[in-house]
Image 1: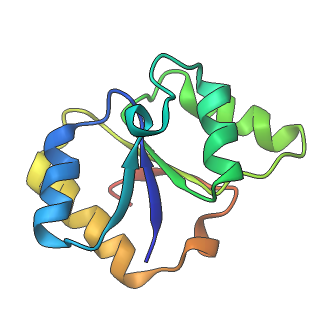
Image 2: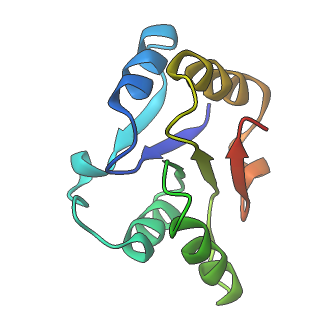
Length: 116
């Protein structure tokens, strides 16, 4: 099962929908771990130290920070970027499918735009 961290502004509807379809999903929110208001690099560092793939809608700044982290030689368990205009039901299905058909290590060091 993928270990996920939902960014501060990531859709709560998507997170709730994933839990409805997959009650044992391993998703926590940035707000739940005291990272509300933190910078992108801080969130990426926490995700790396806790081996969690980041779920985000931030297409503007998060990819650059993720690539900078990799360029500096730091680990990164992965980032899934979902367009905030992507239909909620489809987003839920994509994440559940990725969870069912992959393992955590496959996403190490990757920034993925969902849908694939």
